[in-house]
Each structure stands twice: as C-alpha cells, then as structure tokens.
Length: 392
Ligand SMILES: [Zn+2]
Image (cartoon, rainbow, N blue to C red; front, side, top):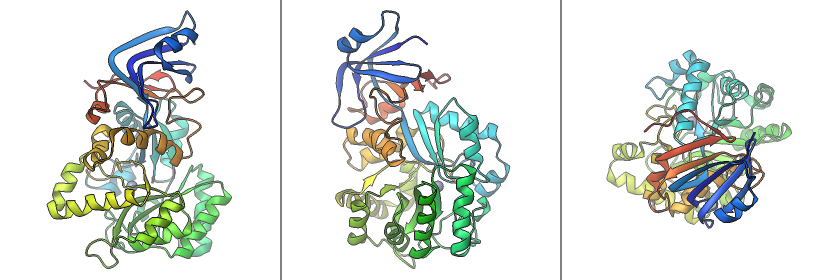
C-alpha cells in the first residue's frame, strides 16, 4: 500500500506534555512511520505518498474505552439481552463505539466467550481485549453469564476455562452489583481476599491480568491486597450500605502497586449524577479527587451496554473528567496512552509514535481548548483504514 500522510494544525501524540503545532503523521500498511512537525515529516515521506490535509483540525490517537459489554444492549433487561444477542448486533454496537472515536475496547463480561469470538472474527475494529464470562459466586452478580464458581478448585478451573476460551484478561466480580435480582448487595464482598489471590495466581499462570469489579470498600481492599491489575467501578461503599468509606491506607496501596481504577461512568453521566441529587454528587466528586490525590491512576470506561449506558458519545463520557477539574491534556492521555498501558497494549496503540498501529482520529478544532471537540470527528482510522461514514 502507498504511504499515507495526514497533516493538521496540531498533532497530540498522546502524553499530556506533547503537542505539535502544524504537524503530520505518516503511516503505511497500518503502522505509523513518522510523527512530528509537518516540514520534517514531509521531508521523509515518499513522493507518491497519499496526502490529506485538515486545516483547523487535530490529529490524536484513537481512544480506548476500558470497560464495555458487547453482549448487552443498554436496555432495561440485560439478562434477556445477553441471552438473545447475536454477533450481528455485537458488530453494530462495536461500530457505534468506533464511530465515536474508540479504536480499542476492553470487554469485561460476555456469555460463552461471545466477545472473544467477536474479537477473532472481526478485523475492521475496534481492537478488542476480552474477558469472557466474569467469575462470580453461585447466584451472584451476573451469574447468568455463566461464570459462577464455588471454592478454590472451581475458581482455578473457571480461570483456566476462560483462558482456554482465549480470554485476554480475567474478570472477577469481587463485590455485588446492581443488575442481578436476588444477588449480594453492591457493598457486599462476594469473595474473600484468599479466593481473589487464588484467581490472581491462576490467571498469572496463564499470563493474564485480573480486572476486579468492586463497589464495596471491603472488596476494593481485598482486590488490592490480592494484586489485581485494575479495579472496576471502585465506588468505596461502606459495608452494610450508607455512604462511603474512603480508606487512605487502601488507596495508598492501590497507587503503590500500580493498580488502575476504572470508574466506568456512562456518557450520560450528567443524568446519572442528577439522579443522586446535589449533595451526593458532591461526595462523588470529592471521591474522584481523593483518589487522584492519592496518586491512583484512573482509566476511563463507560460500562457501555449496561442499562442506560450507550455505545455512542465517548467524548461525552470523557467530559466527566473535565467537569471534575482534570486538565484536558491529562484526560486525553488517560483515554489513550495510560489506558493502553493499563491494558498491556503500550507497544501496540495509545500513542502516535513510529512502530505503533495507525489508530488515529482527526477532530475539528482543538480538544485542548474544548474537550467536546473530541466528538467532532472528521476521520477515524483503525490500523490505518478509515471506518464507515461518520455521523454528522
Ligand atoms: Zn461492567
């Protein structure tokens, strides 16, 4: 294939400190060859390179959504959705993610390895990191996805089973959740620290990291102690319900061990927050700040597919962090470079740098002056190939 040269008013390679005015990106066969000031990149491009210019635009890495569920439909009945879903529906959901600028997703819970199969059959993007069925307790959170296990022997067998299905990551429901009738409460732990450690140990034997769903502070503490790679939701609910239990020692451990937190709020986080009321919304905001102040690295995700969490408007989801006072460059870094590192993809994607996949976006305007510009997409490339028509 011919070399491709993209030129724009600015290039944001990923890390918050990097910004190239009047920049260019050169790639060929899906791999980035050069990134830098336009004149320098033009100087090394082949004379036959295909050239596209985007005046007023910004080139940046494709975004990463670290928490989605392709088997769910964002509707009121996830149990039924997971039972009925087809690969065609999953492809349509993945395409909606792609059209919102997401070129890599981590699917944290399917039925029978459907998202793993999707990953292997679907080459048009987005790139999929998939867990297969989440490990849970009998009748526990999301048991209907088929990942229930009881006791150490069964837990080890369940991890091996998911590894054999082709999982990239092992997902465990360390606490209860919201969507499963007659299952443990969100603040209840489903596993002991010892059981979580068994899961981490068995996953490590298969070379896999563990992502732990944990709303309760007890489950968060146990997951951190067990050495998981990421903590999903990380809600810090007090045992027995009734408010938050922010534990400094646990937060310090999470930061120290390099465990990432993926809070996974939907694109419509404003609606989500307004349902809590102003007082509680303030507490939630304070919780984010508290985690950031402890040095916990956060990665964005939306739980897309869960009830009321759509597959569209990832830019909207990222604006939550802008609202919380995060620097815009930092938000972009979180959704690209940091997420790639957290997912073990730092050598593949998440930055515009030679040798990595040409997963990139061109936005209208400057997302550093207005983060919503991330939703104004002129081009989305996955492995150097354009995706289907972008929504106006
Ligand atoms: Zn989820």
